[in-house]
Length: 253
Length: 133
Image 1 (tube, each protein chain N blue to C red):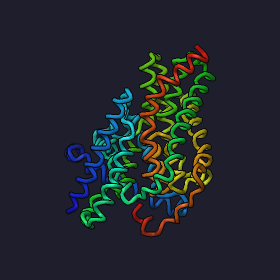
Image 2 (cartoon, rainbow over the protein chains, first blue to last red; image 1 turned 30 degrees about the vertical axis):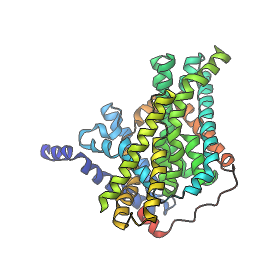
Image 3 (cartoon, rainbow over the protein chains, first blue to last red; image 1 turned 60 degrees about the vertical axis):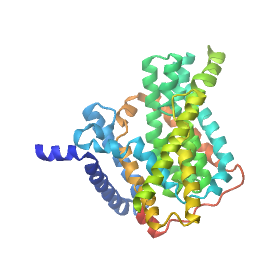
Image 4 (cartoon, rainbow over the protein chains, first blue to last red; image 1 turned 180 degrees about the vertical axis):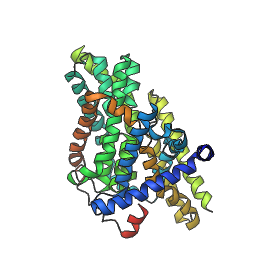
C-alpha cells in the first residue's frame, strides 16, 4: 500500500490525468443513462469535482479541496492557474476577431455593470445582516465580485479579519454556483452566442466560475467569456478600495 | 513540429501576462489586469498572420489544439481543488451575497447582449465536436 501511495505521490500529475479521466468516463455514462444526454457529461464531471473538493476540504481542513490529500496533489498542478489559463488561451485559437470587435462595446458595459451590481448586492446583503459600517459593506461587496477582490479591498481599507473571511466565502460561493448553474440558466438568458458569452464573462467576472460554467454549457463560448472575465478582477481591485469604498463612506459613514 | 505550436502558445500567454501585470502596476493594483485576454488576442492575430503565410502548418497547429482539447479536463481538475468546504462554511450571509451577485448579473445578460444588435445563436454542436468535449 505504501509503495502504491509513494508512486502516486511522486507522479502526481500523471495520477491526476487518470483521476480526471475516470471522472469524465463516469460522468459521460451518468449523462447518458440518468439524463439521456440532457445534462452534458462535462457539467456532471464539474459537479462531481466540486463534491470531491468538499470532501477533501473537510477531510484535511486545507484550502485546495481534494488536492490537499497527498496522492491527489497533482490535481493542484493540473487545475492550477497556470495550466488553466494556458488552456483558456488555447481555446481562442481560430476565434473570429471580428466577433470580438463586434461585441467589444457590450463586453465593456458588462464589465462595469457586473462589478457595480456585485458590489451593490454584496453591500446590501452585508447591511441586512448587520454589518453596517462602510468598511464591512465594501469588503463583502467586493467579495461578491470575486474572492480575490474581497480580501484585496478589505486589507486596503482595514476591515476586520472576520469580515475578510466572509468576503472570501461569498466569492467562493459565487464561483461554485456559477460553475454549477451556468448550463442550467443558459437557455433562459440567451447564453448561446459569442456576444452573450462576452456579456456573461463581464457580468460574472469569476474566472474559475466562468471557465467551468461555460465549459459545461458549450465549449465554443469559453474564449469569449474568458476574454472579458480576465479584466474583472483587476478592475474590481481598482474600484473596490477607492470609488466604491468612498461612495459608501459618503452615504453611510 | 508540434512543439512550435506549444511554444507559440506559451509565448503568447507569457507576453499577455506581462502586459496584464504591467497594467496592474500602472493603475496601482496588485492583480493581473486582462492578461489572459491580451494573450488570446495575441494568439489569434499572430497565428492568423502565420497561417496566411503558410508558416503555421498542421503539426504546429496540433500543439495548440491539444491544449485546447485539454481545457475541459483541466477545468474538472480545477473544480476538484476549489475551497468548497470554506465556501459552504461561510454561512447564510456569504451564500446570499454570492448567489445574489450571480442572480443580478445573470438577469442583465439578455439586456447587455442587445447592445449593438442581436446575435445569432451558434449552430448546434456536431457529433464530432461533442466527442471532443
